[in-house]
Length: 382
Image (cartoon, rainbow, N blue to C red; front, side, top):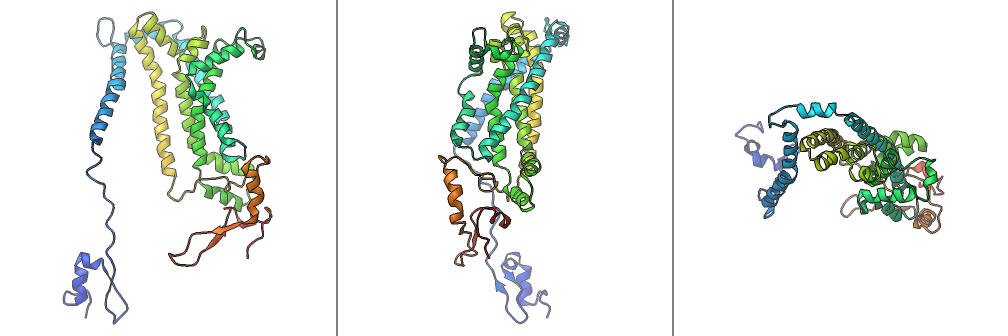
């Protein structure tokens, strides 16, 4: 008899969708085997926390009141002439004003120079914190983030105290002055450094450790592993850090105001036009021009973040000190020094069990390859 026919007992079960999900075909002559029903897929709750919609509405209102409304006001003032008619007259006047083109160029090249200086310094600092056996890492991390404890103009005042007219380190400038572009670049690098550092530390910490294990298994050198694994894995973090530093530098006001001297930048020009000359229309034009590169950097950063999230898989394993195979610490005061010397004493540890009551499997304590065990003084397991 055909088992799929309606007259067959199994055919009735196969025709019923809920019953068919709990039955499976068994060998010939045996009765169907019943299995528990498959779990239902996860569904999002419809309710939510009490008051969540009200908090979301309040946040949206605050955003519209304190961000979108001022931006709309600036945009409208930049497109209206003195008579209140829509016109591009203020933009033409801005382009015809002497010194405005120089201020725009100064703002762009200073921001690019600050980005070019800050990014390598922050990457080296983050690499030393995340991938080396540097002693007192928490202390170095706090020191790297210390510029966040005060406003940016505090750093500018500090550079004036060190490199100013009566500064102790004035001779280091070779007869030059700290006021102007040199002071703006140094103070902005100091202020933007922790922002790039935080991004790069996270980028290096979330790299997939399986790639380093594969590089060790293939016998790649340290430099080749750095250029083919570390840099490609941190490329999205480098791009995000560069965009953040660029946007921070191009919109910084306190540092150029304190240490800039007669060096013209757009952020100070907005203050001069709106507060000093009471020309709110010209200030709105400068603000819109200054906002354009910042918005462009924000859009690019959002695209980079989406690509970074798409590149991470659920099987990615974050890196840690034992997986990178780096050099051990040579400082006896560090716990890594003692760990590196006591590590081979017990190179094995229990791994995940094969079942709830099955035997315990054993795996290497360090996630390096078997070829590295003799080099580290370990006995190769048989």
